[in-house]
Image (cartoon, rainbow, N blue to C red; front, top):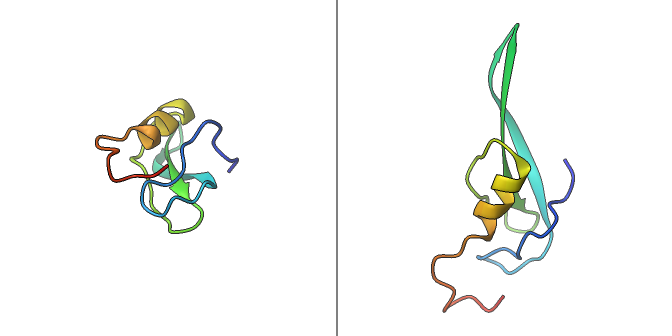
Length: 71
């Protein structure tokens, strides 16, 4: 998938290249449920699964404690 815009660098390795990863969670003849997340291209760290791209980026960017992070 495409690169997320406005995604912060990885909180674990600091790498600044991320991507969207997606999964088909449920598939029936009338419904396809897809969830996606932001993932680091370097270490593979991944944010939580969300229903849309904006939410996935928002959750990836959420940092509870930034005192240790030099990003």
